[in-house]
Image 1 (cartoon, rainbow over the protein chains, first blue to last red):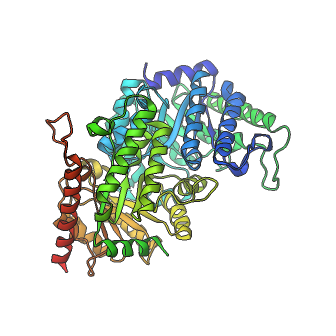
Image 2 (tube, one colour):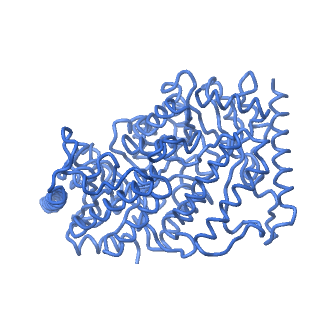
Image 3 (cartoon, helix red, strand yellow):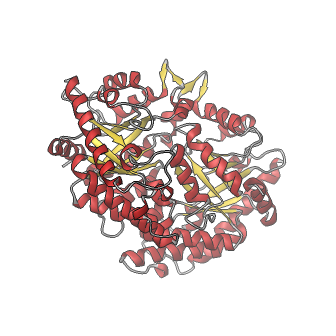
Length: 293
Length: 293
């Protein structure tokens, strides 16, 4: 079964197009998950945070998206924590999008794809899908796409990102249109049947409908809702005619929903707040999609 | 001391502008380094290969460049092997360029930069420099650059890559020039004093001199010599007037110099062949630079 078929079926079975980011930061760790300052204890805190988030949001989410950077920061022990969280997520039936944004070529790209989809000697899947950077062109994308097809795993290519500096390259005008639309054209050419996803920031709602017209059959992974200012209504605009083919990611506003800029400590009910945020974002998203149909 | 000052001093002290790639592949492992098929044994083989390469090439090389993908493919144990090789390289005084090609934004980019330059609780440096992807713009580059300045670490931004598919995005014409020249302009604006390096493939010699004119003060890391077809003469064309500010990377043609497409086994003298290749590439490079002065 292809990744996008698995994704569609998961979205239907939980009635959710929500993806919850898992971005554990040592500095923002809830008080009762802090373990200590040794390398092993720091990695243990990351692992605990990931397991807690899974427990709180799995039934609300189509996918979770662990951000590799926050694990890599703690070295190999952090990477081990990421692998354990990922295995637990897959045991629970939640699809895992590894937010790795890798981009390299040829046999190196193949090795990264194997790291994600056919790990080590066992050849087991680590992630169900990953994010990939297109700057190096087809050689950076197709090795993931091809191994993914064999393994039932998926790829989301960075198209239009949600950050202010996205304009530096992505807004460059190429043959009368911005570079990100040129990249959309490449995606359409590489995967005319739509079996290659795109990362499209939800912070610029005006662009979403135009990109959907360019790529009617491709799944969009939309970051930027919540802390970055995008709304569920904006994101839902890029759903297809059946109200599908979108996956809206929320990270900080769910996983750290309890955190205010003033507070140094976590409230005793932080778990309730995380779960309440996941429920609210999920229902806002499904309502916004329904309103569009 | 800034990374680029450290790099210049290292190039002078070993009379070398050579960077040797460390790309261990389980399938290509010399017979006497193979350990077995368990996850621990596979990671041990990677580690042994890295230590052997260091032993054979350290005195010929300004830098080594481990390719993260080949370690990540073996999971957290592979990452641990990479960390050990890196520590050993730094103990020997060889600078280490982590070929990670990361690209993300804001606090995530900062976390990746910390993974490279200020690791875990100790805050130790893992890599002396890393490669970074510019597709997401300044937000993806400056967090590395700024932490790097604090720590004496460096950044090489992908500008023009050596692969065939590089044309898909990088040759797009933006305001009358290819996108990679537009990115060169961004680099010049972000780091007018030249303290931000660029990755420039040596497979298209015609472009090298043009890029050097655009970025007279920036260091270039040049992949593509050897297996990919670039030559030391081509690469040397991008040296500055003093015959410096270039670092030429050779991976397969040194680390796997002994390997032919026919042979399944490694020759008994594979170490001699690796060392001989490093000596030859180094002296060819320094001769080519000298001939240009």
